[in-house]
Structures are given as C-alpha cells and as structure tokens.
Image 1 (cartoon, one colour):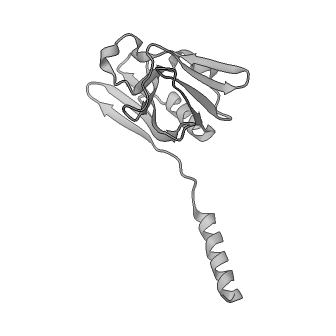
Image 2 (tube, helix red, strand yellow):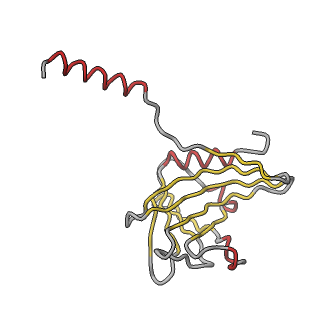
Image 3 (cartoon, one colour):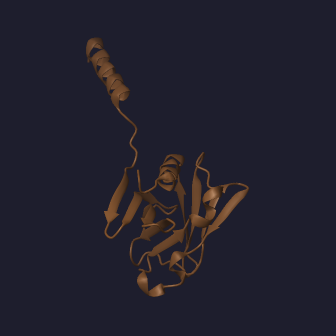
Length: 167
C-alpha cells in the first residue's frame, strides 16, 4: 500500500473515533395502570465463570406509596439456583461490604429458582458509584458466583434512584 492510502485510512479511523459516542444503556420508563411508574435498567453481565446474568435495577412508584428500589438477577435455568432467604453481599470497597435483603424470602411461591431479587431501599444512603462493585450471589449447594458491576452502570442506577414520577 502506498503512504497516501495508509494516511487516508488512518485519517478516516481518527475521524470515526472523534464522532463515536460512548455506549450507555437506556433507562426505560413504563407506566402501568393503575397509577404505577417503573424506571429500569437492564444489562447482561458475565460472572467470574463467564456465565451470563441478566441484571435488572428498577424503581417502582405506586401512587402515593414510598417507592421500592430493587435489583433482580436472573441466570440461565438449571445452571444456578439462588438460596432464599439469603442476602446479596455487595463489596463496594475494601472496607465497605453491605448485605441487601432478599425480597423473595417471604413469598417463595412467586419466583423461579434461577432468579434473585434484593431490596436496595435500606442501603441507599451508603451507595457509592466511583469505582465498581462486586456482587456475591447467594447460591444453593455450595455454588458461588460473583458479578463485577462497573462504575458507569452504577451511575445509571444512581439516576434511577433519583427519578420521581414527575420526570
């Protein structure tokens, strides 16, 4: 290839980089009758064993009631099974580890075994999004798995927390 062709390819590549925007997930808003608004972020992340998990962070506002803020984790059926009622362990930094209560603890008939859902409301004032979190999943039969959630997803979750039904 000539120098002119190489320069053209290099210039085209640099121009593409200048105009590309970083990819962020979309926060979705759903209005569910009667009088319910749901804000959610849906991601797919891999655990330490490279298995995919659907990670759904959502805020549900039902009329005048206090909003609920939850994280739902869904793995492939028959691959892993959650141990209920066990809390989700979140390592935010070396000296801050939080336990998030299991939502499915009280009503075990309403969930699939490969799904866990955790109530973030009690820990909202302790959340940080300047680094990454490690989620230690409470699984049955001695299985263990963890998911590393990066800061840009945590910032998205912070936006969801701050939304109200007037946004």
